[in-house]
Amino acid sequence: MKITEARVILSSPGRNFATLKITTDTGLTGLGDATLNGREKAVVAYLEEHVIPWLLGQDAERIEHVWQSLYKGAYWRRGPVTMTAIAAVDMALWDIKAKQAGLPLYQLLGGASRTGVTVYGHANGKSIDDCLSEVENYVAMGYQAVRLQCAIPGLDKAYGVAKGKLYYEPAERGLPPMETWSTPEYLDFIPELFAQARKQFGPHLKLLHDVHHRLTPQEAAALGKSLEPFRLGWLEDPTPADNPESFRLIRQHTTTPIATGEVLNHLQDFRVLVSEQLIDYVRTSVQRCGGLTHMRQIALFADAFQVRTGCHGATDLSPVTMGVALHFGLWVPNFGLQEYMRHNEETDAMFPHAYTFADGMLHPGEAPGHGVELDESMASEYPYQAASLPVAQLRDGTAWSW
Ligand code: CS2
Ligand code: MG
Image (cartoon, rainbow, N blue to C red; front, side, top):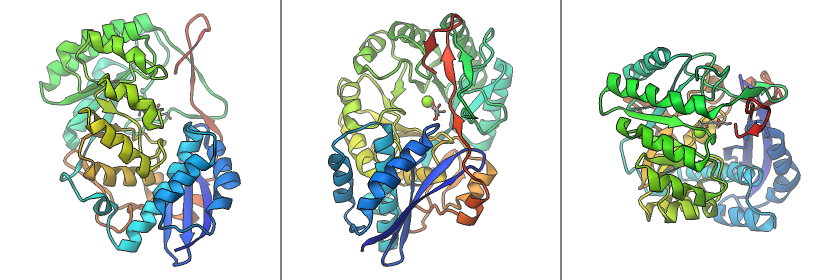
């Protein structure tokens, strides 16, 4: 089965998405997600200039061979742009293979290991009360796990606090917006948020929090320790994972479970974190790390060390990624939790999908392939608009991790 056409469709139904569509000489088509938030066009150029010309004429059935050729053949390895581009191709080819077999993708992986994929929602608020009433809404919708983010008194903006409810989109049109960060205010405030949440929701609801790479290892260790009485499901990205060895210090000081890696894209990025059991959940996703082909490898490596998956599922990963992630999550032996930041209504309409939500779980559905399509005529009504993620600074102007 030869690849006869491959093209990228850019759209912006409230936020930007880059979607790769591959067509074969049998008429079968497959979709992959090539969105890299705030850097979309770098991946589009990588695909259009360097990947698609080679792809045309390749055998669509040789997914592993295509993956290895794109990875090894570039000479320049890893990195978010390369791995997102490879992921888009990989997702589209798995979609085609499963459609060819007439099976939902999870069946090709080895079938369902569970009845559904447990997801977590995002509660955020301008005050603790506001945030807790959001948690209540998620509980009422059936969620078993909720991430809590709250405005920090004294800071004008905080990561994870949305303008509206249900949808959180940090990228803004135009050049990067600035945000001020201050660690002391944050460290003083967060334990109080979780003390009140645990008191109100009892012992069983999974409560999560994303530090978003803002702390030093020592500060992260102190935060993890102060949150121990409230038994978090996980503390995410407590410190940047560029230096994996720095998680040793965090681990030595706290039993709060740690999740990291939504910005990592290769098994080697996780080798120290996983093999030394410095983390509990791997946050990379099928979209960030070269697709299902490489995600499988990372997950099975993690399984050997009792580290589970906790895949990234923010709104900047399109419904195509969500579809593939759910087939993966239904199968993967060491599934932990899946992020589910809901897309807006326009996005859901533009990407008709087979996945459904019930009782705190998503199910990928039984449609052949990954079950997500793209309404191209609708996409053409929402053209791409340049947008950027915020940049953080300390009060004295020092640039900080956002
Ligand atoms: C995140 C994201 O969902 C998460 O855990 O940290 O919101 C992240 O900020 C965005 O994906 C960046 O594009
Ligand atoms: Mg995160």
